[in-house]
Image (cartoon, rainbow, N blue to C red):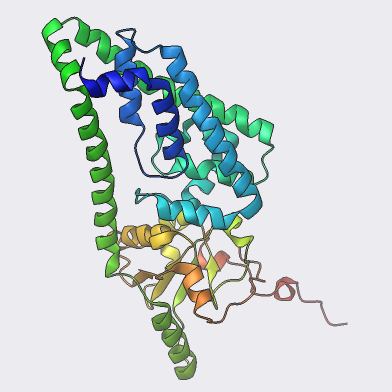
Amino acid sequence: MPIALAFFVHYAYLILFLWVLVEQLGVPVPSIPILLTAGTLSATHRIHHSYALIAVMAACAFSDSMWFALGRRYGNSVLKLLCRLSLEATTCVSKTEGYFTRRGPSTLLFSKFIPGLSTVAPPIAGQIGMPYRRFILWDMAGSFLWAETFLLAGRFFGDIAQKSTRFFHWLGRFAFAIFILMVLGWIAYRILKQRKFLRQVRELRLEPAELKAMLDRAKLQGNKPPFIVDLRHPLDYLPDPRVLPGALRVGPNEIRQHSEIIPRDRDVVLYCTCPNEETSAKLALQLHRLGVYRVRPLRGGFDAWKNAGYPLEQYVTDKPTEAVLPEEIAPAHPAESKPAVPAG
């Protein structure tokens, strides 16, 4: 047996625990290749399937409980850190928050299957105040489904490989090299995917200083200001509920479904709280494909505008958080919505 393979077999459960733990703590190293490898070796009875499963679930329980506690205590700050650590371009807090809004704790059943959601789901569960007992039950159920899927897939491959002695011998000889290639290939794919996304949005970005100048110029000249859309999820309002001057809170899905609410006669600026403006940038690209060309994401989003010291205002209107057609938007002040009292 090759030395690398013998080492893996001897320390299999410790390696599985540490590898999955590191990934679940936010380090971008894929666990799927090592789960497939462990599952394949279980076909030879060199590794016990049940012990491998216990090691993986223990790692998930430890890391997810830690992120749950940090999310409950520090909230949005922890989520931003995790998004920056991720190599997944589609990782964004708003996406996971959207899953929780639509599906509740059942989100934890499938979160580990989606790159990016696995690590940010536990702190969001903590942030929204989910009871720990309820969280750990759903989380362990999801961890079990995730681990078993790939361990059994590896076991199935191992059973097939055993039918050919020559192929199985070759597989055992080059198993370590195949494993390394799988890991490197996975990381390379995610890096390339992220770089492609960043190249697409680089030219669209609007600097906070540019937006400030546009607002000042519109005010000075008496023109319509840019149409600013706040794409943040309601959980993101907790640290600071203020918005950019004149911004309208609209959900990303509602804008996609009702692109007619976006004016064509002036610039449209989208902002969120995601690193790399993931939500606003993706939405801007989608609106471009729908023929809305004067739309740009704000570089750095809400935090960049706030850190630059530019003005923010309280969102005190009766406008809903979901997008509606312009004529359906409520008046800016509650008093304006009261019916007139007849004279006399």
